[in-house]
Length: 221
Image (tube, rainbow, N blue to C red):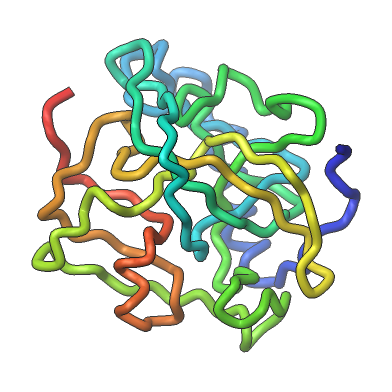
């Protein structure tokens, strides 16, 4: 199916903040941009168009495995989780060598798009029935402490492929296929890691609902 030409409304604050970040990357000299080809762990680039923003989503394990690009080369399999994420139009930040991206902002296939990132305080989310405006879609951060031992149960959706578009409360959403406990580098996270989430509007119970996040505390490659 074709990804619909509709998007969730943004706001002036997020456009200004993310616009500054985009300018820094776009106009930096090539040697200043992070790139795996230059020996850096991430290949961060600005993409433009429709993308999925999963930062405030929770996910459901599928029982399958999913391959994730690793910083050391090749891929590594992780447990897969499916996440429902809103579709956004605009500038986004992607790791073209991360997730399961293949070096380009181009959609992964017909009717598909990538899960990428944009700085914004509001993200449509299931907890408020996908209402696409503040205050209902406020997405504040909270920390899930290491004592919960859930550091390998969050979902890593960044730069992962999404499909199966539908609408909930007139908001376009897609299903993103994400990796449980993977880091941005394709390395397993340690269970006793703390992590930050935007899901749940500060309800700590959401730490155990496979929220989308990332951690720094990792096991060896």
